Length: 194
Image (cartoon, rainbow, N blue to C red; front, top):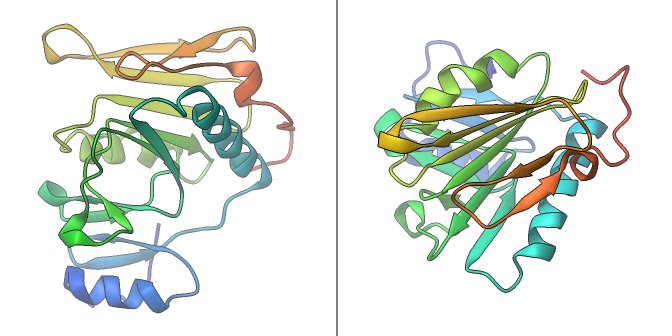
């Protein structure tokens, strides 16, 4: 993340007012605002593939998928962020009745890039675990076939399953949804995307 204004701290309300008029998205963490980089074609294809499959398979269920433009507020961490995909089951809960900021995802997907993979696997995962409803985390590599699936298992411990085969099938444990890696990586071209 690139910080916008050094030594300048904003309230959540100031950040939201700036964000409403901004030409690009920014994240907010404990008073500081950071510009988000644009996404690659592979990144967008992966998100589109997952969301379209999710919408097809769960159109009659009580869960919805939201991609990239819906903000997430994590109260305990004083963080506004834009996950690649959030899944909410049941009633959507909003930050201060705003219809653009969710507070209750059950699952989050992030598409890894060279510049974000360490943050997504590390500190961001710590931030997400502060969300009371959060139970499942999927990291998808856009530069090669690799997927990491974290979920809360027995006794509240996080369990990791990794996939490296296009014929493998990701099955969420908290939501009735599955998708093959072949479908996730449909039309994704490896070898140049960062």
